[in-house]
Image (cartoon, rainbow over all chains, first blue to last red; front, side, top):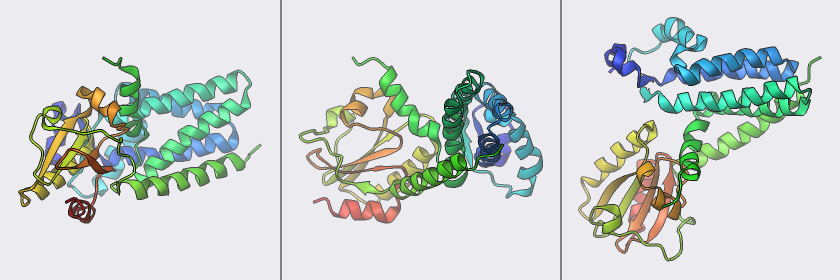
Length: 150
Length: 137
């Protein structure tokens, strides 16, 4: 199954399922730092990672590259795969929180920064620790509420 | 200036939520049935099982859905009175709303009359499924 992942066409859709969890761990550390130091630059850096993850895909973020080149070779060869779209969607949820947090810092609304960063951190922490995918849980609800009833 | 309080609050609340969520995943709950609501063969596109049917709501890209489908479809091969039906949530939004399905996979356990007796969000364990099915008569 892992050889299948080497195929460029498949890579567009299926990724090593362990990658996003590794990225979530780094994200948790970065966001915890942002929260403790109350530093918008740290949040903005993470926001940039979210932006790459949401647009190109989580495998193209710095964390993704780190996973692929440093962590993955040390793991079992058989890779559990997952569709890239839920993690990609989860990254856009993180991006939304990051925007909100940056707005809070820029508009001198400290509470907005703290709450937004806190939510992003909670999502990353839940994913890293419990394999909880906020995007996955939200996705159907989002489709339900944004699609018109017949 | 460093403040650790927000971090501690976030981690404490997120951990509590995480443990709660993890416990609920796959657990079959019987308190969410919509009173008076019935599923039938016409809605499902397939006949019901003669004793019970497991109606699994899935999304096109959902890794736990694949695992759930693999488990349930394999389990029914040895049961001639239980069927397993998979429904794509996104193309059955009216049904999703009627049944108040919030996430995928959600598996609805119904009896031979199409009445819900339990549902499980997330991938249930084999033993949980067997116990739930045994309780349907």
